[in-house]
Amino acid sequence: MPKKILITGASSGIGRALAYELAGRGYALALTARRMETLEEIRKDIQVRHPGVTVVVHPLDVTAFETVPGVIAACAEGLGGLDILFANAGISRGEKVGRGRFDKARLTIETNLLGAMATVDAAVAYFLQQGHGHVVGVASLIAFLGFPRMASYGAAKAGLAIYLESLRAEVHRKNIQVTVLNPGYIDTPLNDMLKSRPFLVSAEKGAALIAGMIERKVKRSTVPVWPWCLLGRLLKWLPTSVIARF
Image (cartoon, rainbow, N blue to C red; front, top):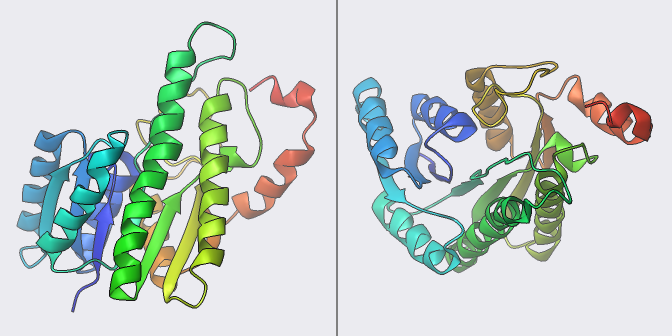
């Protein structure tokens, strides 16, 4: 039986690339995002490339919190079950603190933290009922240390990482695995406007690395592992004068 995975934020970036990567590995896919037309295009393309792969699509705005459990249930029904949640939907607005853009900060928190929590909460309820499951959450290297113009984004990702670590302790011995991923610079629309993206990897390469981590059920990892596994720790030692230049 193929593994069945639900991917949020599947219309672009890491989510989209992972959908294609896992389709090639024979996974059954439930893809969600706000842009239903894009999801339909992806579904059709995947089924042309991989005719035997099951792909279901559902519109989902993770900030419409009350709708999330129903979408999770519909995806599980469409796949005939659910083994893995890939909580990936996210945005970045790059706002500065104190510049009259709190609306953007609030939307970032609502999407990247509260939306992810709502998705994880609904999926875990399903996993507890069926007796197994795997939650994979996309945090960020920015969760390790705050950077200018990334305050709300970093706060959301750090909050999500702690939320998932807490979840792992809650579901200990309940046959539910939890993976926290901290990607570095993966070439996606979320960061392609930045002037500097050190150690950049393609979305396809990032997806292949993530797929391997999902299959190994790692507890936590940077993506790619090297050099960020080392640099991520060193970030906290950077002086503020250096961080302010970013």
